Image 1 (cartoon, rainbow, N blue to C red):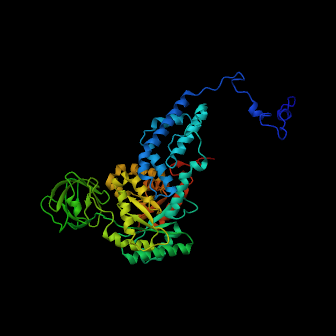
Image 2 (cartoon, rainbow, N blue to C red):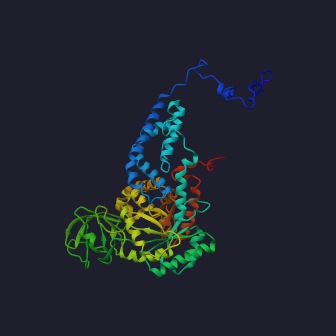
Image 3 (cartoon, rainbow, N blue to C red):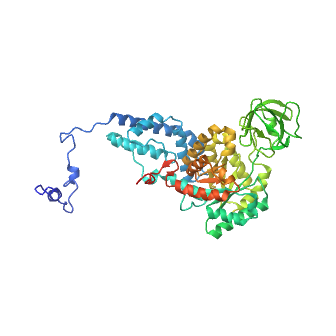
Length: 544
């Protein structure tokens, strides 16, 4: 303070004493309220920034469009009296997100970034709160005070802004169990058949970081499944950590049956492959290989030009000719060296409307065991909202439970991707813990490898908008699991998987080593990323 100047604080106290008790508010206004306006003081009022004013009007128009365009979807999916209040909140935000993403926001995003505002790029779990926060900031910065009372101009509270994140965390804990203290992403492991007779394997998996075990009901039997589940729970109790059990019903898995030739034969580009609906496989002139199929209907529903993919895309071909009980496919792509035709390998038909029920008679028999010893059910080949109702009807015949059985919808077909919002809305009506699995093996074979990365991103965004947890599955650290040595590319893939709420490893000889590495990797990624938001902790790698 300047020693020769007045003490401004003490001077203010001297001229502005506290009003006596009983004095009216108008008799003695606080100093701040007695200050003259800029106009009375001879100062010009601040002018609205034209750039910010234009941005304000554009974001206001976007908000109005989001609300109007979301209304039909919300009326169809979020108005059911069966929904809980929190699930209605989830669906409202999902409807707004679907509406928002109908717009190409890229030009607006760049202008918002340049002006120092949110680009709306992280609005998945908070569409209206994000838009409203931007509007409030734009209004204040542009001096457009007359618009502060308009809809959306009131800045949301921090609790309102992050409500979607809170609902997602709650939904993930309810379905997948609590997250470990050192990472938010859980680790799931598919159990091999030997797990039924090897409790030490489960103990080692849980000790190294496994949170959930997956039992594939396409293999083994009820006795083996119950033994696996019992070993998993015993391991959790021994180590005093929660362990959940997911049982995956098989669904109408389309596979090869008997094949000829049984040995040595490899298919190359240009070769012809015959599929047989029923009966024995056979060869004749011009046909390189032949396979029976597990679901005869697929052969009868093929059309000329339909694509076929074999064994997760190791071979691709197109239907060249059809005859009663058979289809002939011309090979158009295959791995270097050719692809050997084997029994029990998956077939995908991305262009063919098969019309198959996702629930087979075997699945309905298996449901009793699932209800008895699992925490959640993996639902294969679910594609439409009606498929959720179909499963729920089947579960009505199952024995009662003390806790609700969780449901995981496996997204593995293009139709399931298109219908994902409706699938979510249908599942929430039943009040089960609910999540989605990105089943990248079948999904890639259905939509093509080139679109898999794009689709898994869209699935992550849609599920986050609905506060629904996601399981990132298929071929995570596959080389490490099978050979004990990871590739560089799969390490990056596993790191990106940290944006999901759970990552699934397949079975293999080195799966316990893969769990330990994944546990470490996910815990480190937690310091750098939350969903797709970078977390800017202090970096030290390049500092002195």
